[in-house]
Amino acid sequence: MKTFFTLCERNMKLFFKDKGLFLTSLITPIILLVLYIAFLANVYRDSMMSAIPEGFVMPEKLINGIVGGQLFSSLLAVSTVTVTFCANMIMVQDKLTGAANDFSVTPLKKPVQAMAYFLSTMCVALVICVFAMAASMIYLACVGWYLSAGDVFLLLLDTIILTLFGTALSSLVNCFAHTQGQMQAVGTIVSAGYGFICGAYMPLSNLGSGLQKAASLLPGTYGTALFRNHAMRGAFEALADSGVPNEVVKGIKDSIDCNLYFFGDKVSIGAMYGVVILFTVLVIGAYILSAVLLEKKKTKKIKPLNKPFNFKKKG
Image (cartoon, rainbow, N blue to C red; front, side, top):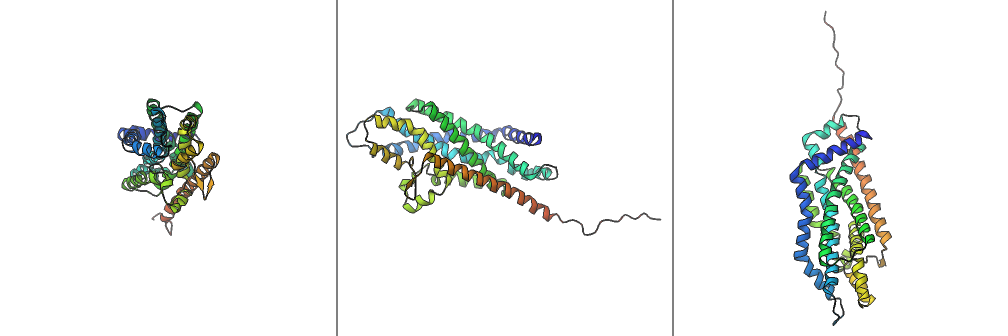
């Protein structure tokens, strides 16, 4: 265990030592938050106001609280996965520098080495994601705060679980990456596409029924819904208390994916957690298995000599 934690510490030190990589990973969620506020806030506001009964006047703080909660949940849903691909760069760098080959000739078992990369990536990504969460809460406090202490705790729990899932996914993908270009290409694809797949940028209710059913099979969809429910619960309670009919509140929740339906049946919060955790465990298992199989394949390529050397003494 001492060797395992030493290797984890070594990986984290290498990441934080690269100031450019660390600062880029840290600033990216803040840039996303600013972009979300600039480009998505009005879209979310117009979408919500279209569902409010005509003639009903809502306080500006409540409107901003609902829109801010949606922006908050979108940012965390994307960052908890995309940030892990940057945090997992050390695994690929070790392949490039030859450090991974050095580890292979030590008594350190491959599953232990794989989990050391996993844990170090998880810790680094959590630092960045918690920072993004704190920045988003500062934004919410400025525009409309409706979070309780329980909501904050659940949002932190969601961040940990989704970061765990993102770490598992990035570890599995990077297990097959051997160059920094491949790593950056995968990171770019994930950053560009994951937000649409998980419903963070565009609610799934705006998609066709076929795409909605396909998205209901993906764990990222349920992760986004968890963030939505916990970031906006207080604001929706205030909306109901202000006199908006419950049917209208339910319609808004349906439209922004707070309520998810699996082939017509509403998915509970507990079931959402179950789906994300189950997929995380499966991906972690696939990652460890892939690391072991790739190591065995590499070992088989090194063919032993057919005949041993015979050193005969002359004379």
